[in-house]
Structures are given as C-alpha cells and as structure tokens.
Image 1: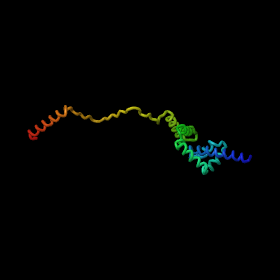
Image 2: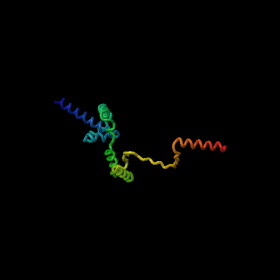
Image 3: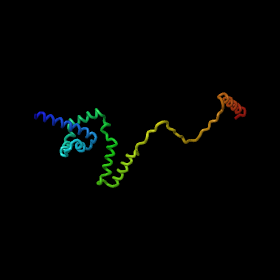
Image 4: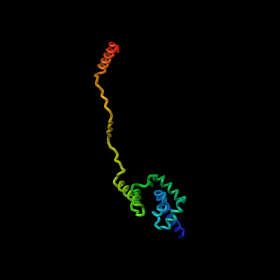
Length: 159
C-alpha cells in the first residue's frame, strides 16, 4: 500500500514538473509565475520555482516539448501581449504617463492599427517622370530611305 502511494505521488510530481516545464517555456524570465500557474499553493510554487529550474527532468521535458510542438507554440500570442499591456495600463503603481501610453497601445492593437492588409491582385505603379516622344517614321524601309536621303544631302552640302 505504501508503494502504491509513493508511485502515485511520483506520477503526480512528474505531471506537475511537466506542466511547469511548459509554463516556464511561455514565461522563461518568470519561473514563479510559471510555477504559480500549475501549483495552487504559493509556498510550494515558490519552492518549485527555485528548485525545478535546475531539475534535469524539467529540462528534458522542455526539450521534448520544443521538439514536439516547435518554438512558435511557446512564444506569446496576441492575447498574451494584450494581457501584459493591460496589466501595465491598469496598474495604479505605474506612472500615469506610462499607463496612458499602455492604454493607447492597447487600443491601437485592438483596432488592428499595426496590421496592414495584404495587397491582393495587381498593383499599379505610377512613374512621375518626364515624357519621351517617339515619332513614327513609318516602316523600316521608309525610315532607311529617309536616312539615306538625309546622308546624301549632308554630303552634297559639305557639312
């Protein structure tokens, strides 16, 4: 019976470490926040945040997660960014000017200010340069005859 209980605790601990490894990949500079997101007890979360960052099993789990899902899975998405900006904007301990800028940035992101639509179809490029006029000299034979006549006239006049 004691063996079953030890096995259950080990499995539960391994699951918590796996969950911490994934959460820590999302917040690599905030191990306590990562631990708090998977462990409800603050004291245990603090202990996990300080000891599990050097745990071989946690590091191995992170490697496996990156190999399985890729790095892009753990980069903050738009919602995460908006939440972080909102945290700054709503924090009364932050300077008012910084809070106002955070509110402005939050509003711009929500309105799609930074997302430019992709151009679909053909684009028209307008060149605003001088115009070159090309006169029509007729067919190639007509043009050649007029050039020969002009050269003969220049030779006859000694120019």
